[in-house]
Image (tube, rainbow, N blue to C red; front, side, top):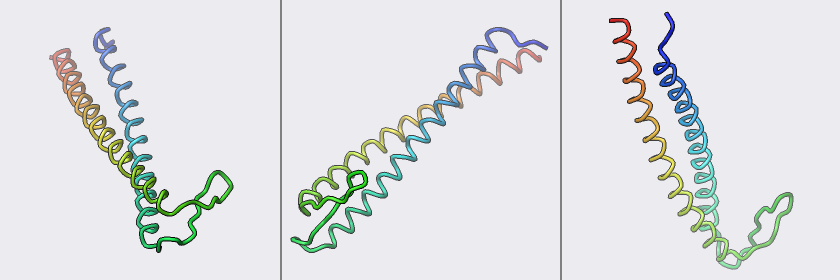
Length: 115
């Protein structure tokens, strides 16, 4: 049985949406990893005494940095990453909801073709 053009179109859209969902999940995972790493670095830096030498990586180099400014920089980065994480979560929820709706629509259309 050959599928009608509209069903084929729906299936193509569904596949594209699945790919989008996968891409969003990968991006969200990347943000989660960055947030965990940055939070860990921030917690470790907070344990150090003021005036202690602090270094950060810049490519293949270690550069001496000011502890307090680095502390502020990491706190800002954590805030930014948390916002990105929330945005990615909302985007992921929207895409998954749309996928569910599309799947239900396709199943309904297919059931109508068979009936």
